[in-house]
Image (tube, rainbow, N blue to C red; front, side):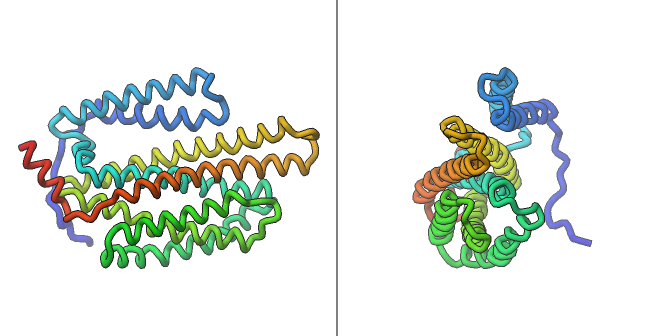
Length: 296
């Protein structure tokens, strides 16, 4: 049996907040997910987005007013925590999308089976499992910038290589690219620990919940945006093709779409790199403690 080391509480469940968060996050994710198929002109897309944004706005206002919020948004008043959340959101939008696009490229352009696609991505997954603890130990010894910024650089290198994928790219090259991406990811993920370190212990659960929630939303929205970019890039190529029925042209069209999507991913990572330059080395929870003292 695992011993419980924390104090058990029975907080009151605020059902209106649960409903508002469901409508808010659900509406936003659905609108971006449907964007690739329906386009912005469809009422379902912009209608869901409007409902999501309005619900989320009301949710935020309610969390700041009620006594026991389900998400303590005061954590965002801590600058370095907010910066960490923003950084992880940008990176996750790009990385979740890559995890979707890469198998699609392997199966639609290189025409490999789903099983072989998994085998190709397996070395990168193994490397990430090995590098996770290593990145954690390095984070404990060095400043955040020493770990996080090189991680973003690794991810950027991988994205730069991915945007050059062609039907002639070898399996070994893709394995190496994916492995570089996974190494970078493990270093970048330490930004979550850095962000939580900026909070007081009483805000840890809320900080973790905010990270987890926004990661999932960023992944869903990012994947929708990147798939939409890939589809539009493919369509643009085929519309300008002299012989769109040619199988070679169809393959080139798909390749062009994937290259455009990975280029967008590289842009996201460049933005993440710029954001990471503003990370500061601060004592654990100092800003959050000052915030709580000022409010009390």
